[in-house]
Length: 280
Image (tube, rainbow, N blue to C red; front, side, top):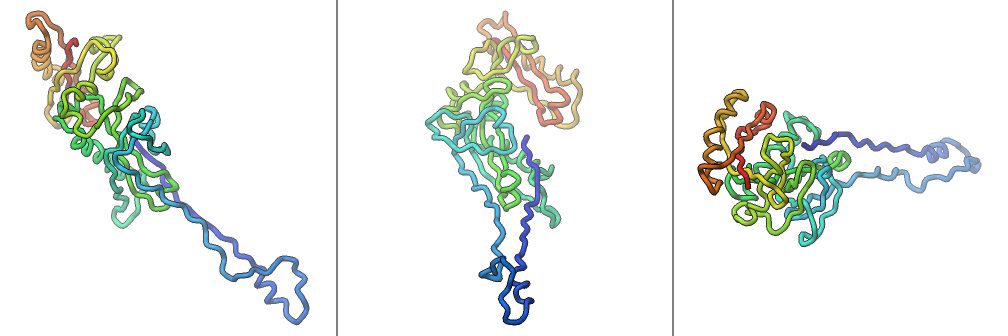
């Protein structure tokens, strides 16, 4: 996600030649040059850009989905007791120096830093287990200074947590989010559910605090390494998800279950696990 365009701020000055022309006129005759002589020989200093202030942690913002996935934001924080959709849980410093060269804020290396740092920091902020986080709709998004501020020396990055209500939509956040996945009632509020059986045309992934009929109930860890192929990742989850469906049902002899496995593209992005689903 995020990414900016680097640039170079260049300031230029035009020196007045009035004083030099007057000095070269010679004699006691008054100058006929109508331009005033500068009162000082030193030119005024060039304007300088002011770096963007470093964001504060635990600040709350009212962001739309599009704003949340943008590389920068100029939204002002709001009172956390008011309606909001994001909370800043961490602020870090960019490492933009490599082999003695300054890297642009949108360079692959700099962006990879943030893409690794914010999700890792989110895990310790939210609490819970890896499975709890994979079964929730809570996600990390991040922001960097804009081009002008970056050129002026701003080198921070900001990590926010948001909750997906559905595809392309954020849910409002309530209560204290730090350690939220350690608290069963709050963990359920931000859990992942579906509007229909996974794999059907009516299925949409939604937050469990909204209307739903299926729930993601467990995670199937898959071996690291190269993508083993759809046949293998699909077979790996059939047994575990059948058992998870039975455990979630009132009648263990009559139940439904579903399995959602990663595609090759999702695997390349780091999703080395599948999800088991059951009616809710």
